[in-house]
Length: 168
Image (cartoon, rainbow, N blue to C red):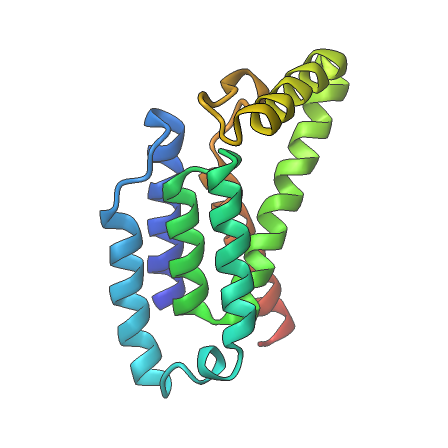
């Protein structure tokens, strides 16, 4: 039942992300509260206590991605809260799957639209802007077409289905 509620909240986050480009703070907060209650019922946060370095590395990668404007703040909060509440191993797999789905989507866009050179040009301009200014002043919206929240939701559902059919 808990996973259904969390997946529903992730779906809501994806829909908000598609509609407005932002994920409201209430969604990660709700996942955190529900996840905290569930983790306390199940025996606590042992995996986080045993693997703090993995969580620190994940946090660092997500914050750097946000600083480079590759991910929005809502995406970072949602992935961190999801990892803390669902478990480090499952959270990492959802993060990796999200990035993999996003890369596949980008590759399909390149192949379907034939816009590979234009997108690479935008990416190079983006990298040059960061190298020159040491920050990115504006997000290259033309480079992406879908909210990352959709990939988080898809990865969470995929992970849940895999674990359900595997029996774990």
